[in-house]
Length: 71
Image 1 (cartoon, rainbow, N blue to C red):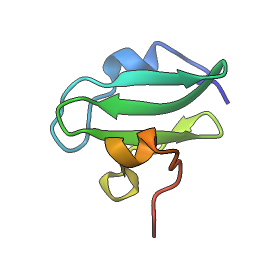
Image 2: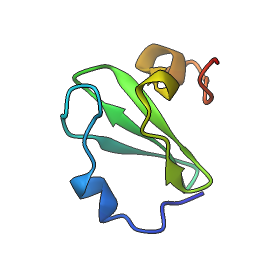
Image 3: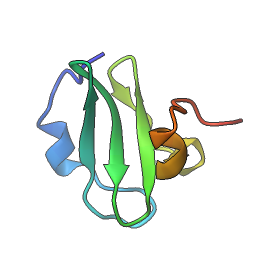
Image 4: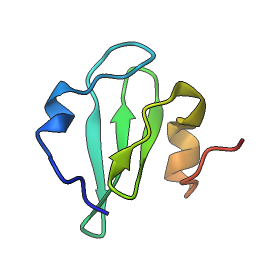
């Protein structure tokens, strides 16, 4: 589901390093916010970014198709 307000991407920061995030779009859907410094992705669930460090997915796992954090 797309983010309702794309402007929010400009003010969000990585909770771990406080760096910039990049919006990931797949099939016209916003699926995650990537931190290139930490090499992790924060998933977007029903249009809501899940900005919890323990729910972040390592970039290599994201690239392999993982979209949900292991609990």
